[in-house]
Each structure stands twice: as C-alpha cells, then as structure tokens.
Image (cartoon, rainbow, N blue to C red; front, side):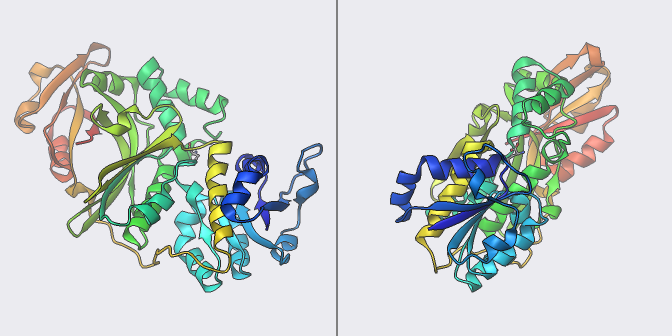
Length: 402
Ligand code: HSE
C-alpha cells in the first residue's frame, strides 16, 4: 500500500522514520506493507535518506490512484484544509497531527470521509503520542464520560515544572523553553492556553458527539503565574498545572482551560516536564489515566502511524466516528465549584477576608511583595468572583482543583 506525507518537518520526518524503521511490525498489523511514495514539501533535502521521495507538487499525490493514505503533518489551516478536503473527496484517507485543522473543521472532514468511504483520523492531534482518541471512542464505550481533565500542553508543563521545582521565574523559563525548541519564538499558542483549548475542544466534541466550538471555551494561560504563586501553592502541599477540562453535571456541559493548584491526591500532580496526562472519569469505570509524551517527533509520529495502520485496515470503509457539526452551547463556568488561593496586599490582621470569605484559611505572607494569601472554601465561581471584587486590596487568585 502506498502512502504520502504532506510536510517534511519534525512530525512528517518522524512519520517517514517510523514507517521505515518499524515496517515489518506495521505490515503485520496493517495486513500489508505500507510504503511512502511521496513526501510533499516546498524545500529541498539534499543528502536526506528520503530525498528521492520529495515532491513539490500536491497534484502528483492527489492524482495518484495508488496512494491510499496521506499523512497531513503541515500544521496550520492553509493549505492543510484544502489539501485534506481534496484528498478525502478522492477517496484517500487522511491521518493528521494538526489540532488546529481538527478543532476548526473536524465534523466537516469526518462527513466528507464518510461520503467517500475513507477515513479522517487524528489521534496525534491531542496528547501527542498518548493514545486518547481511539480509547475514548472504541474502549470507554460502556460509560457516560462525565469529566475529562488534562495537562494537554507539553511546553507550558515544562515551564511550570521548572518554576515549581527550581524556583525559576516565568521569563527565564520561557527563554529556556524556546532555546530547547519546546516553545515557539512566538509562544502565544502555548502560554496563553490556545493550544490546550483546541485539544480540550476536540476531546469534548468527541465525548458529546457534537461540536464544542473552541472559541466558546473560557481560556486562561500561564502568563500571570509567578514564583510567588508556587511558594503559596507549596505551603498548601500543591503545585500548579495548566488544566484543560470538560465536565458534565446533569444536563449541563462545561469546558475551560486555566492554571489550577492541584494536590498529590490528583493523578495529574505527578505529570511533569514535557509530559502530558489526561484523566478521564466514567460513571462506571471511575477514573482512567493516560500519560505520555504529548509532543516531540517520534511520539507524535507514532500516533500518526497508528492512524495509518487503522486506515490501512479499513480501506473502502469509513470509521464510525460520530462528531456532528451541530454546536453545543456550553453552560456558564461561573456555575462550577472550586476553591481559590487569593493574594491580598497588606497584612492579614488589617484585612476583613475572614468576614468576606467565611471559612477561609490563612496560607502565609510574602514580605517582599507586601502581601498575604489565603485559601477559600469550595464555592461556585460566580459567588467567588463577587466576593473577590468586594474584598479590599485583593490582588489576584488561582483556582484550586477540588
Ligand atoms: N506546542 C504543543 C505542546 C505541541 O507543547 O504541547 C504539541 O501539540
């Protein structure tokens, strides 16, 4: 069976390597050998072991009847969206690592694939090498999944881990993440939470079988998190993680992305460095945890190639993925319940925080910042925001995962 790769960057290069290095195992699992016939890229790769496969002409791939499966590893929407549509319309399955494409056009591309008896698969778009989409769709089928909460972005998890364990400050750790190639020169998508937002939108949509529009999801990144927050978190026996979550309570559905204090009773507490972790709660199975490398060349390529195997096993047959383009209106996140770490200017003794926040517990002070902090009892976010606004000298807050 012939395959093609669109984009010979980090992930595309990994896909070529995985298909080549593991060709025997892959042939057994797919039922036949899978050979890369073309790699599309605008650049030349003199001396590369796959140099002879490089083409600059998308039409060559689109018009080649022999090519049955195409890996889209270009990223971005243009031209990935048009290319993917064209390929699916000509009956070729597409396996992508592109969460932007999936979050923006998932239901349409799944529909087109079904109409043309081929597959649009996207295991690598969430959690890199972690199998999460196929387990959610094919394994956890006996349950009503009422909560998915995950560390879905490796770059920010690396940064937060460094801030927590080494006391590095945000600007230094961002610089280091950029030097190591984890964070982009423009780190906005990672540090503002947009990447995690798209990933939780995909998981929530697959869970609810309808579209959770990522633009509707309340998203806070990590740019306001400081070493002072970590110092207070440590006093509470907790660390801080950027969490993407979706939650169903009765008929209500919620999704949000924000930094949270989490304790060691939470399985996400131990997910450090560039690793991702996704905790799924089902009403029968209880908690299931997925852990692994959420980014990187070979882990992400491993997930793309697992889709290639799936597509190869299902040539001429569309998968059963249900993701309707009907949009879900999310409920107001102010109805959700958390506790809150609150930082207040001045001295504890001069503040009426215990009157405003009944049951609040003092955490400690920070003379360098001329402030103290406390943790509230669990309350709805709506109630909390009203009280926070009413508290004199309140500076900032970080949510505490319940
Ligand atoms: N920038 C992403 C991350 C890459 O750091 O997790 C993988 O989606």
